[in-house]
Image 1 (tube, one colour):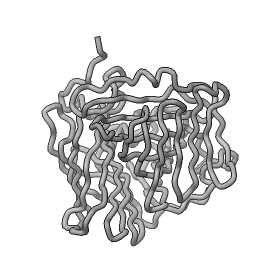
Image 2 (image 1 turned 180 degrees about the horizontal axis):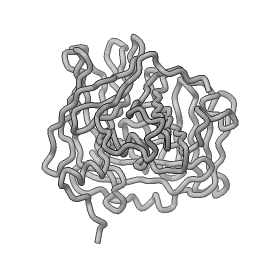
Image 3 (image 1 turned 90 degrees about the vertical axis):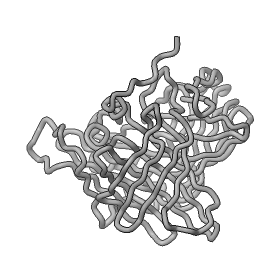
Length: 345
């Protein structure tokens, strides 16, 4: 691996009420954040895994809005060499999302994950009528196709991969992610939005919600991209919580840095999801205003995802586009007294 953690260490001190079962070797929750220029070696499954951890998953995903005003939540998980069907929902932004019927015929089964030329390629094996392919050139664009369903380009203006490492005596976790603007078509309709792709490694085969960050620190996760008319940009990944703190990393045209000791606050919609998220780091402040309810299927609300707009407060540069993806963990949602969307009758 070529990854080098940022010299700045991002300390999360929001929640430590669920310490690991083994108190030895535990020094409190510490999430280290950094940014780096990815190479093919970072995606090559034949390379030694980082920190001696096991491959956990690869994923590409996003929330996009169509020209007709519909919102699509799209996610493809790949568990090393096997993938379930495509997760694809559709909504008007306020009504409960519905599962898109065409996703039932999407590919599931064994996959290949290889370096081909200058790209990392994950592709379906067999079932040509349901072919799936994700192709990423490190530091450049990625291309995602699901035959008969979607064709999308993922572009990152920064060319930077963001990384987090959370050491834990029982369940250490490391991930790299590329935050992207998504543009293309779903079921023939033009769409655009925000999302990205990522890889994760851990001690065991745990779900993200079972990992230390999700269990003890994160309640909300935000990914965003801002593109300015002068050619500048801002790309970030961070987590926040009701306790008013958080951690993350941001990349701009001037460089990248860890966001440690974030201070955060929330305004909530009547359904309990964020309407506005505001956070600060030193003298810098940001604000997300969501424009949707949850775009996740009520059939399986493992995560609650919203699309919104983002701005850096006190930055008056003209903006070309600014989109934010917001995640709320069900654990946090129910802890506030709200009921998760039920299964449809």
